[in-house]
Image 1 (cartoon, rainbow, N blue to C red):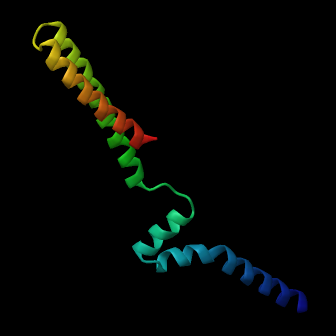
Image 2 (cartoon, rainbow, N blue to C red):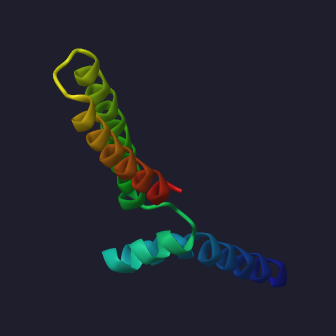
Length: 101
C-alpha cells in the first residue's frame, strides 16, 4: 500500500513538472509570450526584417554608384557632375555600412 502511494505521488509530481510549461503558455497573453521569447534569446522577426532592409538599401546604393559611373563613361554626365554625384553616393554608402556594423 505504501509503495502504491509513493508511486502515485511520484507520477503526480512528474506530470506537474512536465506539464507546467504547456499550461503556462496557454495562460500567457501575447505580450507575455513575446517577452518570454525575447528573454530566451530568440531573435525577433523585426530585427531580421531590419537587417534585410539595410542590406537592400546598401545594395541599391552600390548599384547607384555603378550606374552613375556608367552614365559618366557613356557621356550622359559631365566629369564635374559625376564627381559630385559619386562623392555624395559614396558618403551615403559609407553611412549605410556604418549602420550595418
